[in-house]
Length: 214
Image (cartoon, rainbow, N blue to C red; front, side, top):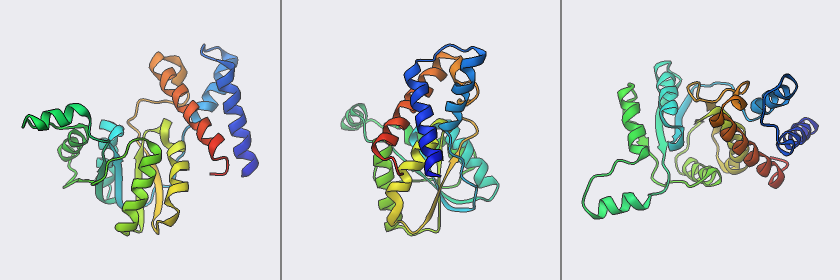
């Protein structure tokens, strides 16, 4: 397993450093492999709670609504980002401000999710999310916790959770949303996909470099 991980990491580095941005039959093969390397698919299990980070957006709302309808999740909670300056200013002026987390919860309700919760502590970045989820898990014991993620972010998120959730008694798994706009076989064919894919590859490589045994 260790050799396989090192081999995948080395190939990812080669892909990034080569600067491959154009699709040809020869170049498409490693780029497709790199797209799939970003994705981690855990087996789907019935969960006590599903955590939907704010940045999953409507794709996260749709995925968790499907899981609720299928009877695979009992509770749903949203992990928000920190308060932005404009939100503080709206509130200072006494004007209601619905942030992205609130909008996400409204979408869930419209999709049939009953009483989605909002985690009390926001998180800025994946590392912070891992810490906040670990703290929440210790304060709120559950057996099965499921985290919703876009496909392109799922492997890095899984690595972070593996490091941060060691003291949590729950079994934690990552569920990739099927509604996200990332296709591992075609991400390099559009400017948007290329930008997202390269950013996630860089972040994953940095995580591997910093924590090679995660």
